[in-house]
Amino acid sequence: MDSVLRSLAVYLFVLFVFRVSGKRSLSQITTFDFILLLIIGEATQQALLGNDFSIVNAFVVIGTLITLEAMFSWLEGRFPMFGRVLGGLPVVVLENGKLLEDRAKREGVTLSEILAEGREKHGLERIEQYKYAILERHGGISVVPTDEAR
Image (cartoon, rainbow, N blue to C red; front, side, top):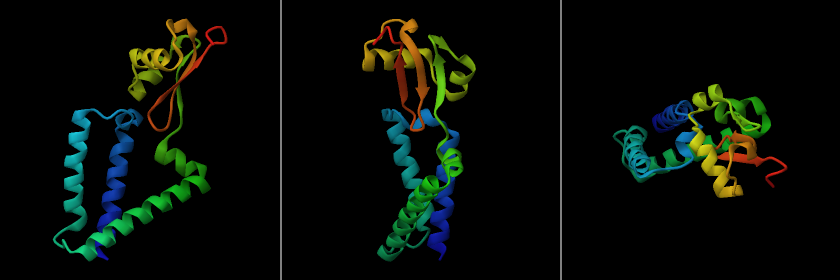
């Protein structure tokens, strides 16, 4: 039972940390981010297993984590409010060629990131060609070009 409680506590803590760190924290992983994730993984492993490094305990921990993930996915599908709390909502950060600075700053999105996404996906050259830029739940940026730019 100790392993199950440890798994639950660590899962919720890591979920909270990544939720607080913002949507953009997982959208593009740099080398630094990858190394940090490895270190977090090692620290998490120690917290999950405690002093019991047996194969049975590892299976209990893995089973608990998979069950938690399945349960949260089910809850997100069943109760939309739960999904908003866990994953947030998409946020419009640019509208009709104008950066919504307060939203962009709050979400940690820069104008250069938005412009790069528009160039890469739609070949847009000027900010006036952007109808909307939306920061999605997963951290990616969706760009909707104006009708003239299509």
